[in-house]
Length: 95
Figure 1 (tube, rainbow, N blue to C red):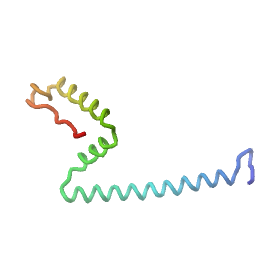
Figure 2: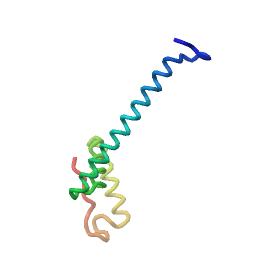
Figure 3: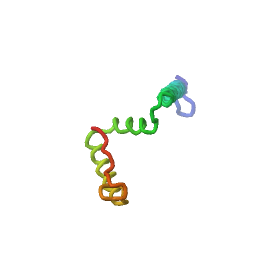
Figure 4: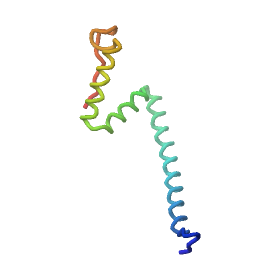
């Protein structure tokens, strides 16, 4: 392996090529995800809500509960929760 200025050139080239291939795969996967969202939208699903559900599913149950409790608290503080303008509480996300 040739060293250029203390850098292992072949190893560096190999790492850069791997990163480039992974970036290409990531771009292709991103396009696939966009296609699935477009399909969902065309069948009448709300993609913003779907993205929120995906985010919630990545979280563990305790983090979801804590986030929902804070959301409820903040909603009540601005008049969106129980007894506020809307008269109802913010709906809880399913665990």
